[in-house]
Length: 536
Image (cartoon, rainbow, N blue to C red):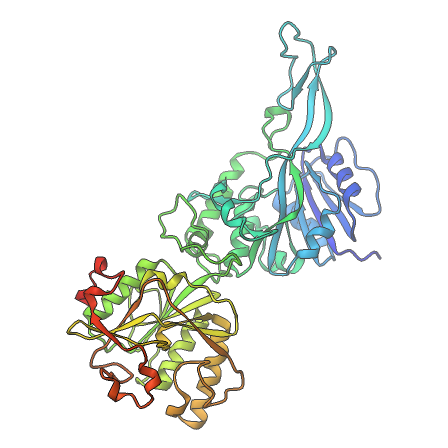
């Protein structure tokens, strides 16, 4: 029995170009790839020639496009499955080019071109671009025309960016192409056009990628994209290859093969799944996807652009709930304005501030470490910013992106602010409230830190700032580095800080910690006057 790496699934009903599509596939396949066709209620006309790598299933009564795709997938034994429409052309070696870059949690599509499938030609040689049939429209001609199949993959447009609007209708997403230009040859797309998608067979079934509760057809691109993204995967467009798709704009000559009323069934079911966040396998809500791509037409505050590598940003926030509420609410309002997703952990339940997790423990160092780890584990961001309840964070703080995945980065541009508006600044002030780090790195460290404290108890020598010293050697050692945001953060000092307040160099045992000692007043700190920082 032949072992295939890829199974191409083609559901087909009333498809006049099916045989030509299969011919094109066979001409351009270069890997261990098979084709599985389901003839849904009609025989192919023209017929499909026999080939060792082509399997054809026939149903005398239509079962629907999704059901037909699922039937084809059940016959596959390949690692990957690729659903395509029955009116497409393909790049030479498209299969090996796609699989060479494929990752198992991705859904992948190539560049999409438009397929110029045919012309209408009259006996006098007048040619009309593909469209509805009819007599020649050249002046004074009017003779009958015949279809001349040319099968040309047009080189423009080269579509790579797609989305859906708030009614879940497919849209091209030209605004996002500038962001794709920063990502190289493998680029993200919010959604896809349902004529083509590639994924592992395991993912196809585990995500129920062609859910027949949608009905026969419709909403395919939205379904595949949402199930991929919201389950933790990625939709990737591979610019190293292409396919060309013929759109159904030809009226009765090349219309939709299934009744149009069925589309409304799919849209209604799709809206229930995604707009109501009722899909049980989701680890993200739809809002997360909208924010990630700054999608227009949605009344959801966007996430600021992220690094060219496509990593996502998020905030973790932890509090002991003992802070003066005037200060706490001011800090929370400022963080909400940033627009990044927030996971908060608190010793008392909190409402309306990010994803809140109540940690019912007594205040203390170990509790703080557990709060941090709990927030890290709940977040889904790649990069996290540690945010504390008594620090006013300037928006420029969140522009920074780490270079190294195993380094804790500290924003040392911070002023300590007293209630009489005195502000103090020292060089290289590295504190936990200024950390930016890859989330998985932080999870590893805080897991080890908690295990150490639970075994040996908290010791002052271990410090609070990961990567800054080796007085306690954790199993995994990380480095630290510093950066300065364009504008400073304000660390609000009060009578309930977890660490001591020191307002004179004489109070520092190690004088290197007070180098660059500078004092001013809050109203003179750049970037905060217009925000009313004096009222902190």
